[in-house]
Image (cartoon, rainbow, N blue to C red; front, side, top):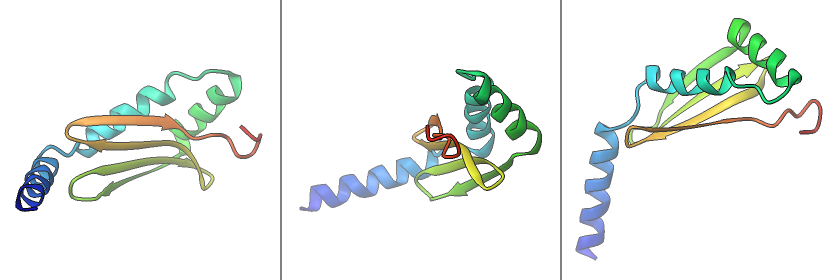
Amino acid sequence: MKWIVLLLIIAGVAGYFTRPDEAAMRAGADAVLSDPQNVSQGFESLGATLAGDRSYDNYYVAAKYNVTLDGQPVVTCWGAFKQVQCNRAPDTRTGG
């Protein structure tokens, strides 16, 4: 049991010091926005780039970055251990 607690503490400290900063998360979100899969995503990406709201949330060992347009999420990114994973949110207005 001591080893598990020790490993969790080590992982938490490592996560704290290797959490991606806002610039890295923004770059990941911009990469997703600059690669639309269809015309609708292209217009959505343009709108999110020009008028979208961006937020960076720090969870100490991980980070979350959101890009929203009119209150709807467009891109959501999670980051930990210097890695960033960004995904385009499904468009709830068109059902997919």
